[in-house]
Length: 169
Image 1 (cartoon, rainbow, N blue to C red):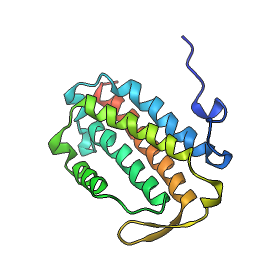
Image 2: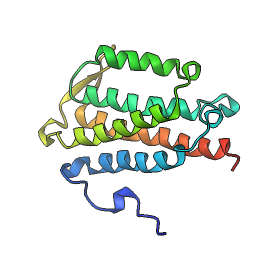
Image 3: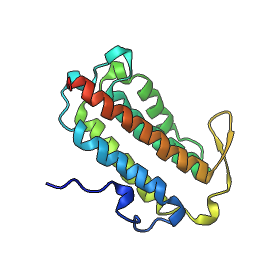
Image 4: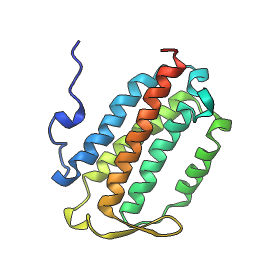
């Protein structure tokens, strides 16, 4: 069996403007890196916290939530009550310990929604100013999209590393 090339080496993602291709590639790669390795975790592996770090389950919950929030800001919108509730749920993830199928479904849906959103972003909006969070910190549409992809990649790396640790390999 041949391992496919990384997403960024497979060419453009259909329907996404050229300047957003790197973000689309990174977000799709996150899904490809995480979903196969997380699909068979036991509950103990999912919620293990070696050295006190955040568990894989936390990252599986936080990654699509943060992706959704950052892309909401990139549209120039405020967070909805549902998004604020999801953020609160992330803070309680280690206590609530959601089951793996629910986490994986939310994760996959978050990746799909992010890529679908990127297909709708007009190039003329990329440098529009955007406010982030309650403090309304300054960014742009492009800055938020880039950070959403980068932030997701960071958490995916943590999941990949933790996966090796909790499996003893």
